[in-house]
Length: 361
Image 1 (tube, helix red, strand yellow):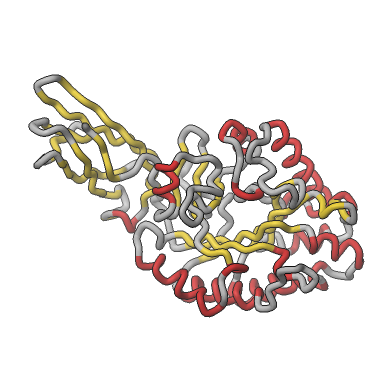
Image 2: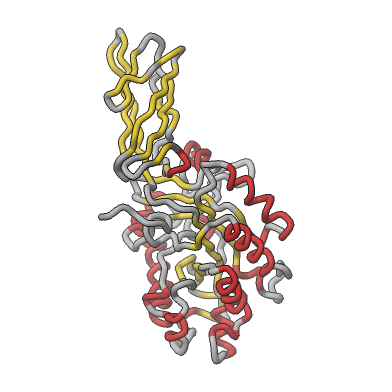
């Protein structure tokens, strides 16, 4: 059987994966071929021994089709993969916070003079001032019977705009319950909820504060519903892809791609025109003492070292929440401090390519 084993179809490759110059990234292509077959990769003969081939090629464009052809007595076989060269890549991190609704209710009910009189937003502003951190808050339409987003006033539009360079709001779901609301939902349901939340954020915070989402509640969306997200500007979706001993929180990706994402930063889905990113840490589940040991190994592996996808949930900041985490702010500080000291820059995934500079259009 002829098969390109490396790189993987949809691989996002950067300077850590080969020898990069101003004009190209030279990578190794390896795979298997039938015995006694001759193999060529992109038209150049690839040395083949004992059913395995390996050769170098140079990527010069954002997207490259890698085509292996083997020739034997019975004819030709072909296998092709497509990869992405993240030419302008840099060490970077993003911070996404899920399940946001309590802070909107708190501000609306208390009518604070400033957004940052809300202790939650004040914590995030402190982290921004200390580390330069940027945050995307993924929001619900309603917390239930006691508050819905249309109740939030337009009073703070100027303050939202003044802080939009580091603080963004986005869609997450209609509500916290039920769990996995879009796992079996129609595209129409997803689009309707998305537009409700997006419309309200635009109303009370303005266009500068809006961000296309990168995490849909529970990370589960029907593949057939993804086009409604892409049509609305979604370019990246984050998930776990491998949760414990099973493939889950994965937007219904097949097991093969989930396995790849379990030990790589990102993977391009050319059919959907969406990049998947693997969450590297969930701060509400990670005590301060475990933050560095969780992230440090990722910085040593070229497949996971370039992009840090940091993540947590809003509810753990609130003392009234049954699972309140008293040192939640310290956990974020530890994670952001770690990546900052390692030279990672804060980004928004929806800007450029995974938060980095993209190729010219």
